[in-house]
Every structure is written in structure tokens, then in C-alpha cells.
Amino acid sequence: FVAKIACKEAAIDPRDLFATLPDLGATAGSFRYFAPAQLDFAYPKGSQPEVAFLGRSNVGKSSLMNAVMRQKLAVTSKQPGRTQQPYYYGWMPNNTGKADVRPSDATAFMVDLPGYGFAVGPDKAVRSWQASTQKFLLQRHNVDGTLRRVFLLQDSRLGAPQAIDETVASWMDEHGIPYTIVLTKADDPLKSIKHANICCLRYQLQCFESEQDDILISPTVHITSSKNGTGIVELLSSIATEFESSPKTDEWVEDEL
Image 1 (cartoon, rainbow, N blue to C red):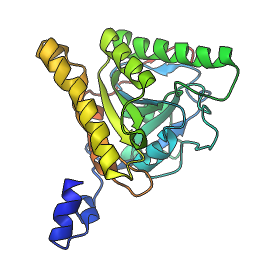
Image 2 (image 1 turned 90 degrees about the vertical axis):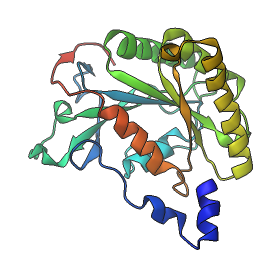
Image 3 (image 1 turned 90 degrees about the horizontal axis):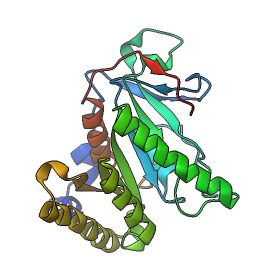
Image 4 (image 1 turned 120 degrees about the vertical axis):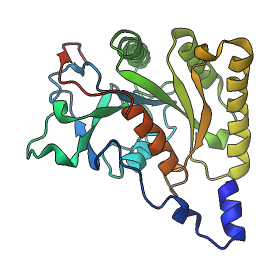
């Protein structure tokens, strides 16, 4: 928002500041959705890095992921709680040279996780989705070592993290999973800035209470809008940094999705 004010004074379109989306890795490419059956109902294993998107149901996760991927791969719905299992989107370099690409051709993955909180469905099923998500995070980060970071989405229109958002963030802290807070639907600057300031206090509190190596929350708070494109390039740059953190491998593990 500061950049927008500066651009207004200089008569510059703020979109021109970040007109070119960064490449993910050394070459250009695109994302590709891989259905569970294409993965043989297994998770990719080894050093193929992953980032996961997680947030309350109806936080705008699918719309934001589509904006980041620059194509409508994630299914959006007015009915919250539609995502019921991890969905994998592989980063496919254009130099694969194959007409039929496979999941093992991907150099990295973005994972769409089931939303927490309110969701349409039987209570037992909702609890099952959330337990499965916790199991996924623990397995992929603490055991397999493939999950580099969780992008934890919060609705900026609310002006502050909700109680369940704080609970999930505390769970990440407790279990040693790095995460970055991403504010969605940021069309009201005042609410977004207020919300971001509160999130920054969590980072400052961890700095005060912990050793530097123990801080799991990122000092960066992404303020985004899939509707007008605010913050999408900056978020994509953060994802690219995580994707470039490790080489790929073609090994697989037979864990059920």
C-alpha cells in the first residue's frame, strides 16, 4: 500500500513495478494438477520441495492459488469446505521435452490442503479432514523433509486473526513447522494493515522468547488479493525461493493420500 501511495504521487501505475512474474527455478514453466490416481495414491518423496496452502474454510484459498498459478487449476466454490484431501500441483519446466508429463517430471509441488474451521459436511468427516491434515504436515516436514513451508491464509477483511487461526499457528510453533502468514481478500487497506501489524507481533514475541534458530513464523506477512492482483508477484517470489531450496529426486514412497 505504501508503494501504491508513492506511485500515485509519481503518476506511475503500481502494476508496472512488478509487471514480470519471476521464473520458478532456472527455466520457465507452468503448474500442472496431478490427481491422486496419477500419483499412484502416493506422496512424492526425496528432495522435491513442497509448499502447502492452509487456511479457514472460505478464506479464498483456491482463488489465491489460481492467481499464483496463473491458471484455473484449483476448484473454487461458494460452498466452503470443498477440499477434502491434499491436492498436488507440480511445477513443470518447459524443457521437459515430453508430450506426456508425469509427476516425477515436476521439480517442486504446491499442495492445497483441506480448510479448517467451518466446512460443509458431517462433523465426523470434518474432524477426519483436520486430523489428516495434521498427519500430513508432520509426515511431510518432520519425517520426509519435503515440506519446506506452510503458507497460512487469513481473511484480512476480519481485521485480526481469529481464535482458530491463532490455534493453528500455535500448533505449527509447537510441532516445528515453518509458516508464513498470507492475508487474503485485501481490498480494505486499513483492515489489512491492522491485521498485518497483529501478525507481526507474533513474530516479535517469538524473537523475544526464543533463540533465532527456533523462530518458525516468517517476518514477512503477504497482503494479497486474487481479485485485483495485489501481492501475487511477491507471494510467487517467496514460493520460488522455497522451490529452489533443494534439488529434485525421482524416488517415491507408498503413503496413502
